[in-house]
Image 1 (cartoon, rainbow, N blue to C red):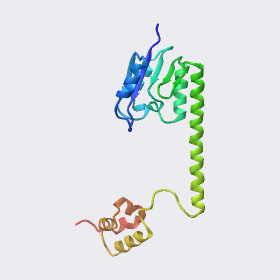
Image 2: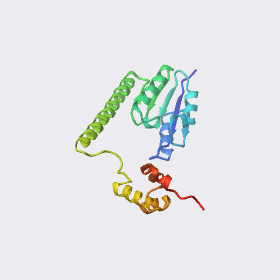
Image 3: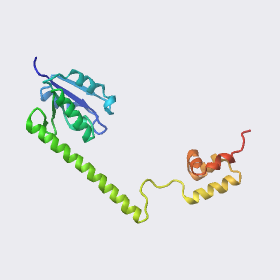
Image 4: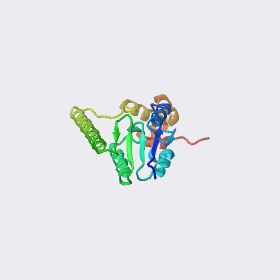
Length: 193
């Protein structure tokens, strides 16, 4: 039985048009091309599932670019290894990866290892930056919506009998934010008439 070249194309948030990918896959000699027109997780990609079901030993899965399959290096390595275990080749056209050759498998593993190392270095740099900021008395993350002045104002208004909805509105915050910072606000509600 002849080996088949199966293509897979998927949109991303940056590239919502499949024409470029489809043209490249046809040019690469794909017998069939499966596509997903909704960006999402592997579980939400019926086109990829059909492509994987179609592939048989000796076939090759071809994608336009690695990020069509996923963003995590570990997931990409696991995916390629799963194909290899089934005797299926993998080609990424723009990344010049072809696991049907020894040099292609080597290049893919080196590239994946370098990407993993860069991700780990980025995590280390982020943690070092956060630690340095904490040592200087700064805290990372989003700026607090409820400042000490707003908390004080909210308590004062609530104690004067102002309805919580009006307090939240005047401070420019939501009701859940008010209740999160001043849990007793619920106890100051006046019964509806």
